[in-house]
Length: 280
Ligand code: MF3
Ligand code: CO
Ligand code: CO
Image 1 (cartoon, rainbow, N blue to C red):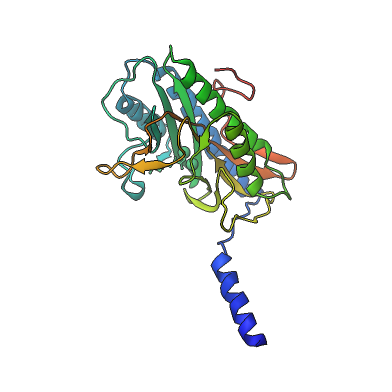
Image 2 (tube, rainbow, N blue to C red):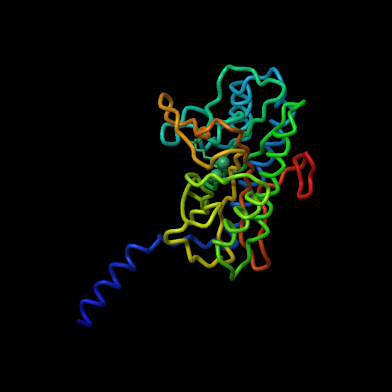
């Protein structure tokens, strides 16, 4: 009986086991900081070009050349067969939009998601840009997505639970009448692009992560916030573009976060982008 019980417990333990999230030492952290800083620099480089009339393919080309000119590597290009350097997600596109030759138009909102590899370390961040003038519903959504990301970042505490990030984001979004995408999450990153820990932006009902945040963990927080349903659909043809199921608007922001002894350190802070408290 005892043996059987032990077997059951072991099986359960295995089912619930997650691979460990890496803990980075000071030397690793310096690598991560350099990668995050370059990614932010790339975002600032791209920023002035994100205007009505530009095509997302032109933005992609600029990001590609800037990355190579600085001796670094675009992480998305060729990743699981992804065809481009950046992801550009316009309006109802939730994430992983493939750059194309359609010019951005006034009233669009576009998420530009950049990931680079610097000396083997990854940096990953995104912003949603308003192609002014935009309607109030779009502006309010972008504001909520930005604020939701910061509410999530503020929930990062060494010794606290990873789950608190998703709890804070989901509560904030619901309070403002929005929904939170569940199928795509934040992720650990380091020498790999996507690794442990997964960072849901809500609290999963089944088997939520009990992970305790420790100094030296590194991951992204990148909530995708929708006006309508949280449900998404994958483009049948390109197998990358993710849209909201009801084609309602979606917005997203992303930072790479290092957990330190004193709290979250944002590795992808830009010089010219929105800061906490920013009004769009
Ligand atoms: N940068 C995205 C993220 O935040 C991932 C893009 S993967 C790609 O995780 F292959 F679509 F580029
Ligand atoms: Co990203
Ligand atoms: Co990411």
